Length: 99
Image (cartoon, rainbow, N blue to C red; front, top):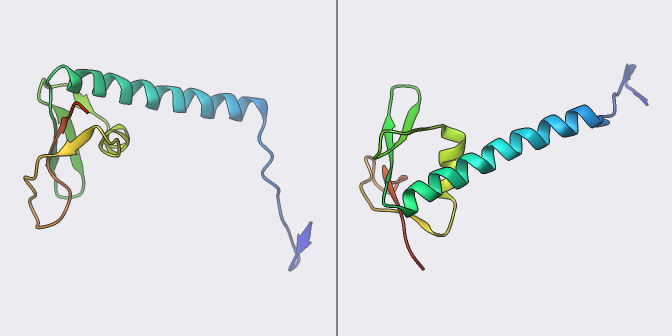
């Protein structure tokens, strides 16, 4: 398809790109499940703010990637315990709750 003198490329996913995406999602889901299992056992998730980023780690010392941490805190069984640094922002400590 040509629009405005430029050729538009359609994004057709290949088997390899789909497999790569699936492996990435499997790693993310595995990371989320691992973190939630540790939190279910009593660990809490902590966020430490840096000048241009945030570091996430469990109270056990296990480092958590920012992407995995954001997926973990979206779960209904993970709640912030209210120690916000800047008003109504995100909590810095998160815990697992039993429903």
